[in-house]
Structures are given as C-alpha cells and as structure tokens.
Amino acid sequence: MTFKQLGLSDALLKAVSKQGYEKPSPIQQKAIPPVLEGRDVLASAQTGTGKTAGFTLPLLQILSQTETSRQRPIRALILTPTRELAAQVHENVRQYSEFTDLRSLVIFGGVNQKPQVAALNRGVDVLVATPGRLLDLQNQGAICLRKIEILVLDEADRMLDMGFLRDIERIMALMPAKRQNLLFSATFSKDIKRLASGILNKPVLVEATPENSTVDAITQKVYRVAKGKKTGLIIKLISEGNWNQVLVFARTKHGANKLCKSMISSGITAAAIHGNKSQGARTKALAGFKSGQISVLVATDIAARGLDIPLLPHVINFELPNISEDYVHRIGRTGRAGASGEAISLVSADETTFLRDIEKLVGEKIPVTILEGFEPDPNASTQPIKQGQGRSNQSRGPKKTSDNSSKKSSRGSDSRSSSRRPKSRRD
View 1 (cartoon, rainbow, N blue to C red):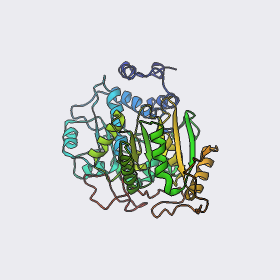
View 2: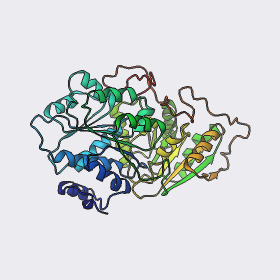
View 3: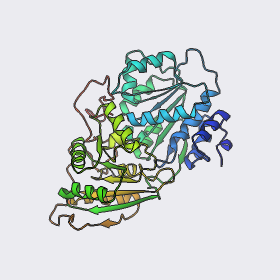
View 4: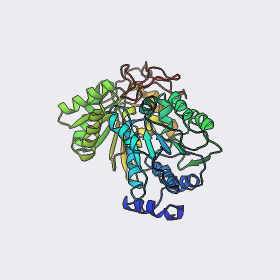
C-alpha cells in the first residue's frame, strides 16, 4: 500500500515525500479512505502510529478541493487537550499543507493572544486549538465557527479525563449541525463511546491495534523499591547507564519539581514541565530536551500529553499512575515509528494495586528487578496511595488530576470550569 493508492493529491504526496514517509501506517491506511469519502470516523490507535496524519492528510485534501474565498472563514477545527499537542498537530498540518493554498493557525492559552487574533483576522482555513483559548476568543468575538465543515477531536480520551466535556458541548453548539466529525483517541473507553454516539453520524469504526495494547518494540521493566529510595535509584539508573534522553513521569507538580532539583544536585541536567509552568518555560524545556541540552525531562501526565520526541530511548515512571490507561499512554512516548525503547517503572509497596491493574490491562506480567541497596520495605503497607484528587481505577468518569493549579481567570490560560469536574486544572 502506498500513499498514492489511498487517493491523495499530488500536492500532499509531495509533502509526505518531503517528510521522508514512504508508506502509510495501518491507522492511516484504515482512516484516510473513509475520511476522504466524507464519512464520520471513530478511530483508536496506539500512540506513535501516525494517527495525526490519518486525519490531517484527508482533511487537507477535502478542503483543497474547494476554492478558498477571500474572507477565508475557518473551515476545519482540530481540538486538542494540551498546548504541546496543539503545537505538534499544527506543525504536522503546516508540513502537509506546504504545497497547497491553505492557511493554518494554532491557538492556546499561556501566551499573548494578540498575534493569534491578528492571524485570525487575516483568514484561516484550518484552526488547531485548545478548548479554553478557543472559547475565550469566541466570547470576545474574534472567532466564528459557523462555516466549519470538519471537526476533529484529537486525544478525545484525555479531553474527557481533563474535564473538557462541557466545553466541547459549547463549542459544538457554535458550529453548523451538518459537518463531518472525526474522533481520534488512544483508547476506547465507555465515556469515549458515549461521547461519540452524541457527535458522530453513522461512523466508520477504525482500530489499528488492540485496545490498550502496548507497542511490541517497548521493553517493560519494574523495579521494586522502598518509597524513600526511589530518588536515589532513578539517579543511579540514569547516571550509571549514561542515559542522555529520559522522560520521567511524576504524579504531582510538587513531586516533579522536587525530583528535578535532586537530579540537578547530582549533576544530571534536568527540567520539569507541568501545568504551573509558563508556556515559555515549557517550550524552552522541551526544546532543550529535544536538542540534547537537557538529559531528563520530568513531567506530569497533563503536560506530557502529546509530546512527540523522535527516537526517545527511555521512559521512567517515577510513580505509577492510578489510572491504568495512563500507563499505556506514558510508555507510548518511546518505541515510536518502529524504533525500540525501554519503559521502567519504580514501584513501591503502596503501588502494588496499580501495578496489578496495569498488568491486567496490558495482558502481560511485567518483569520485576530488585537492586541491592534499594530493596522494597518488607513492612510497608500495600494499601493504595490516597488519591485526594484522583479517582478509582475502575471509575470510567472524568478524573481529577493532581496536576492542578490555583484558580485563575480562563483568559490567557486554558483553565475552565466543568460540570463534570469542577475546579480542575485545564491545560
């Protein structure tokens, strides 16, 4: 199968070739044809399998087939849960549309809105946005969605987890009822299927990999360790392994900052990225990590959603997520695009239940290692960590994340209240 056989235009084929892609991935092979046919699509694919191109390429082709008007109203809207993912998706849109006449723009909070408004005034065909900033600008009269032809909800599972349901409903009410809808998600939870049933019209169901499966190229390993010895162990692994690019997941903003400081004190170049960091600081940290100036990026789940680091060799769960599906997404940051990767989890006694649930979800027993000097505490309780702002792993409703921040006005950020998850941090 080739991209040409999928029916893509010469302009898109030229752009794809320039990016070095020779043949479509499974999700692209399955998603592109029905999208080109104008069908609604509900798609699930393992992260790193190319699902962004699965909706971006056909979307651009559909828009290119109609002559653009001088006013250039927004004709396609791509909603993403986080700033980093929005930036990543827009970069893909920009690359693939290089040889077309289409204009695109990305908008999100945490940065000055004036350049975004100026670009909107010049006319935009494809808009990539986070819900908070989109609604802010719409309320100010800077955005009109009455000409939307295609709506894409990317990483829809995370949008629900972050409490964006009410915002999504408000945004849909601003668009024409007759439009093409594409819903892409890393997982197919009951909430996702419920959301899809209210948005999609006779959708084509596309699955490139079994639900919640882990990529075969990822080697998974668990280190059983006493809770108080985790910091020492992770520093030992990174230092003695001479690892130069490691993405570390912490559960809270405070924990991410604390771990980052410990690593820096031990001579490891590190930076933390989470919801309390300014967009400038987040962009700088990510750029340093990608360039190799920073060896370790310590992130919370919200800030890390959508991070795309080519050939990332190592992911470490400093703390296990209490939501099993988040584990699949975390380790999916490595082993992307056919490359191999290693995912390591540091598991203390109080995370035993989380580990068992994760193994049940992924359908395999993860090998366990114990290092001398970092043994688990035999007297520690195996009772699950108290998640004052979390949810039960069996709960399918939106969860409260511990990566929350103080109350702010939604203007200039992507924080907004939700009827299903009030006062939550909205990236």
